[in-house]
Image 1 (cartoon, rainbow, N blue to C red):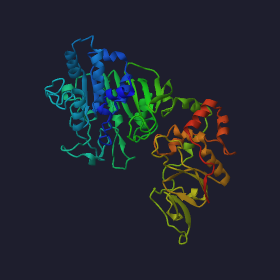
Image 2: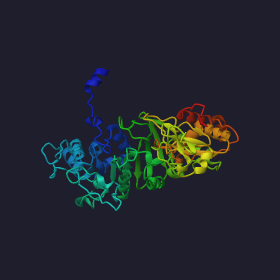
Image 3: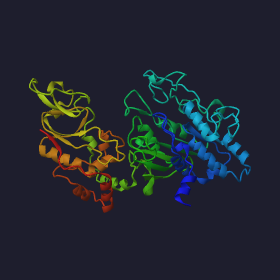
Image 4: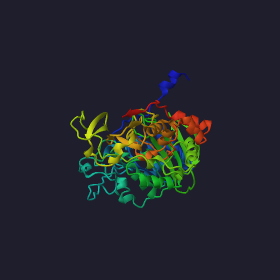
Length: 510
């Protein structure tokens, strides 16, 4: 068949073109949905008594693709196509729509009609919603104005006329009274990722973890979900969730897409996304696979997820980290300051000239250097007189691939301070020590170790927790560090494939 003939026969999937409806309604591409379903054991497709649930229906893709597979897998059990389809759609497939609109889209995908009771529906239900209702739920707010179930702020409550983002599955409204005693065997889906919490973008609060935890708590045979990967090493309010997931030996498979836009074209999910298979009757290591440009990168590896306090997402990095940690050296997170090292927020600036100040201090702020009065410094006043190395507290771009991971170190001399834009990575008595330390921070070795804990633009002190404190009695190079930790040629090549070289000169501010 010629290319032209194949093109003429190609029928595009409308769900491939479904646009993102809102910040929390990111539909799953059919290719990704099918890859997720592929993780399930083949026997699930021939089990007529299994019940399936998508707890956050957006496009209906998971239920539609599950229906296709079940129609094939149950052919021997029920040879009559109409009776087989009727059983699957009425008794096996269920969903909870996250909005009225996604409920209509989901029913159109599965039943071919938004009204499941109409003559256009391939299976006739008594109710227009069929097995994919939108169930209205309400937030329950505490004294702080936060929902006790999902943490949403009270200003998101918009009444019955508008969507209030109180998702039924995590607010006790679904399963409904009719289904409260129903046992689900397979829960699969793409939950809402986040809700705005009154901040700006990066301040949005994750919500997907509540769906995952509720799904697991229902104790099905299998859970398959796709979520942002930020929980691996960070994420707002995700510490308990991360600890729970890493310690769960029922996590059987994990597929990770670290590259921006790879799994969800056109949708910016910083830190990438991943999907997993949780299997109730399994206990053992989890098989991790990294994907890049839609294809497997490297070999899958079976690992226990809690070997470190965060999930090291690249299998190739584990042996490197193990060699570094084998020396039991202190790490830089104990040396790097917390945010606001001198008490000043990012938007604080001093004056352009120091002439009228009694005790002027050079002040490094956001995109500019100014002068402040020393008496205004709120904390760590003694650091003003030291040599310091400053590192930006945020580093990253909108590029699909991050290769720097840290900003260029600034060596700041005595008589200096900074705003929240920077962290004080270290203080020193001598300029030579500060410059050698800055050289160390510029190495690919250090920035690679930082990358293992840095899932977003934020470069807090915690991202330095894998970086060893080496003696500053010499100027460290990557070659010397590779030798110190006994890295192999393959390990060195991996580091250098992930981290771009940083120019040799540090910024120096006398």
